[in-house]
Image: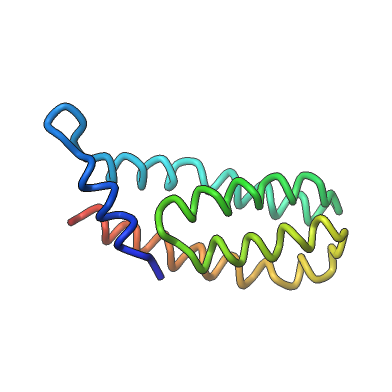
Length: 114
């Protein structure tokens, strides 16, 4: 689910002047990613591959930064589908994206408590 070694590397950068970096990054993801997921759904519903590609690129990067490799890899694959204008395949894959996203949110919530 999450590559916790990435989160541990980020935690290692925390100082008294910059505490809770991981918690703040997780909170930013929790606040921003619902808009990104919504943008992906809207783009697919509106048959807008370029908007889907941009939103998927954002999700790919933000999830990779937190060690959510499966979500990032799925976003990469879907980003290519959008580039290829394969909107049917993109629509079929949305449920997988949503399921993985929910797993990541749960894992990140657990990480916040550590």
